[in-house]
Image (cartoon, rainbow over all chains, first blue to last red; front, side, top):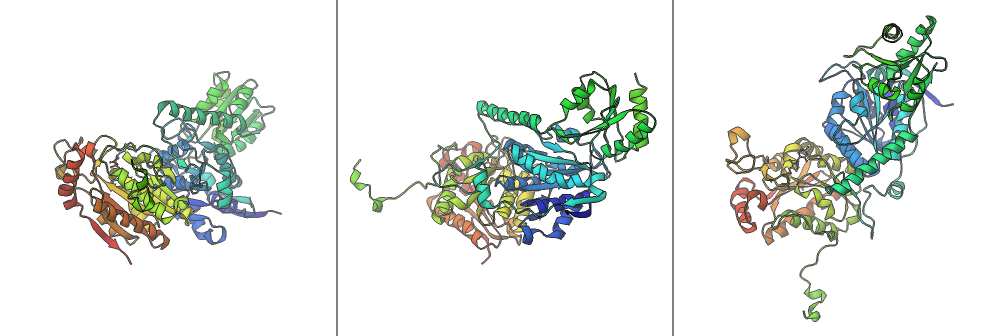
Length: 361
Length: 253
Ligand SMILES: Cc1ncc(C[n+]2csc(CCOP(=O)(O)OP(=O)(O)O)c2C)c(N)n1
C-alpha cells in the first residue's frame, strides 16, 4: 500500500521534489505559493537526500541559480507566482536557448501588475507562447488536483530532460492552496555525479582530459549558425508536439457540446457537466494536461462531431484562441471566464453554455 | 634560429595549456587577455583544470569561454554570481569562479553581486573595471570617473545628473561574507605578477570554505577611452588609480 497524505497543493510540490530526488531548489517568497519554500525549509532535506534548498534574493537570482545548477546536469527547480514568473522570463529564455532542463512552478494569481493574491489563469499566454525573448517554448503541464501537483513534478523533470528544455507546472491559487488526499512515492535516490557525467555530455561536470571543454551558452554570433541552433530547437519542439501531448476527456462520447478547461476551471466544469446533463444538455469536457504542446489534434477531431465549444478560463480569454485555431471555425467557439481572482460557479458556466453556445447564433 | 638554445633551463615563458589555441578577439592593449592568462596559469599551477567551472559575463569578455580551457557557462548580463551560486551549492567540491566587467557586476548585476558576497558564497569573483561599457561601444558605466567622456556622457560625467562613480569593491568589503577583497592592475609587469598572486590566493581560499574572495582588476579600454595603449595605461595610472587605489582592502586570516 502506498502512503496517503492530506496535503495542500503547494506542499505536494515540495514533498514530490524531495522524494523524486531533486538536487536543488532556489526560490523567493510570494503568495499564494510560499508554502513550497516553507515546507522545504521545514523538511530540511539536505541531511537526508542531499537536496539543496536556498532562499534567493529575487526571482531573477532564483532562475539564474537554476541555470547554474541545470548546466551541471542537476535536477533543479524554482517556484513562484505571476509577478515573480515575469521576472524570470529573461532567465527562462537563456535556459531554453542554452538547451537546459529545469522545472518551474507558477501558482498563478490575478494580474496585471501586483493584481491580487487570488487565483487566476491569466498567465496562459506568457507560459505557452514563449514568455521571454526569442523563439522558444516551455513544456507546460496543468495540474487540476493536488495529486497531479505531486505527480507532475516528476513528469515535468522527465520531459525537461527528454527535450533539454525548461518545463513549467501552470497551477493556480486554488490548486496550490486546496487540501486533498495524495498518494506519495518512496524516496528515490538522487543521481550520482558519475551517472550525470556519463549521461549528459552537454553538462559542465569538469573537463575531461584530452576532450574539449564543455561550454554552456545561448550565444551564437554567426547568423548562419544561429539559424541552425534555432532549427534544431524547433525540430525538438515538433518531436514534443508529436509525442507528448496529454489530455483527459470526460463524457465526450455522446457530447454535443464541449467545455475546454484546465486546472481548477476543469474541476468547476465537471460539476457544470452534472448540472447540464440533469437539464438534458449533452456536454463533455476536454481537459488539456499539456497546455504546450496543446491538444490541437483531438480538438480538431471533436470539432467534426460536436456543435460548439466553450473555453472556460479564469482569464479574459487566452486559451480560447488555441481552441479556435484547432477547430478551424468549423463550429461555434466562445470563451467564458471571470478574472481578477474571481472563481466562476458551475451555475455560471452552465448559463454561459446556454447563452453563448446553445442559444447563440 | 639556433636550435641548441631550446633547453628547459632557458625557458622564460610558456603559454599555459589552460588557454585554448583560439585567437583572442580583444583590442590590442586590452587587459582582458592578460587577466584570462593569469586565471589560466593559476588553474594550471593548482592542478584544478578538471575540477573548475567558470562563469562568463555579458560584455567584452562574453567569449571568455573560447579561451579558458575549463568547463564554463555563459550567463545573462549581470547574473554570473547567481549561476556561480547554483553551481557551487550543487558541486561544493569544485572550484567555481565568475568573471565580470563593471557594467555587468556593478550596474545590472548589483543585487546578484551583493547577495552572493553577503551569503559568503565560497567562490572566486573576478571583476574587471575599465570604467566604461566596452562591448556596446563605450557608454558610461557605474565606475566611470567624474568628468570622464563616454558616448552617453559626451560632455563628461556630471555627478549631479548621472550619479557618482561606484566603489563597489569597498562596499563588498563591508560584508561579513567576503574574506578576501583586493584591487589589482595589470598595466605593468610587476603589477601583473602581483595580480596573479592575488588571483591564486582567491582560488586557494575556496579550499578554506570561509566565504567569498573578490579580485577587482583596474583595467583599460583603449577603444572606449579613444587612446592608444601606452597612453591609455598612463591615463589609467593618473586618473583611475586615485579613485580606485590598488591593494588589499580586506584579508580575513
Ligand atoms: C539585459 C541586457 N541589457 C543590455 C545588454 C547590452 N550590453 C551588452 S554588454 C554591456 C555592457 C558591458 O560592459 P562591462 O560589463 O563594463 O564590460 P566590458 O565590455 O567593458 O568588458 C551591455 C550594456 C545586454 N546584453 N543585456
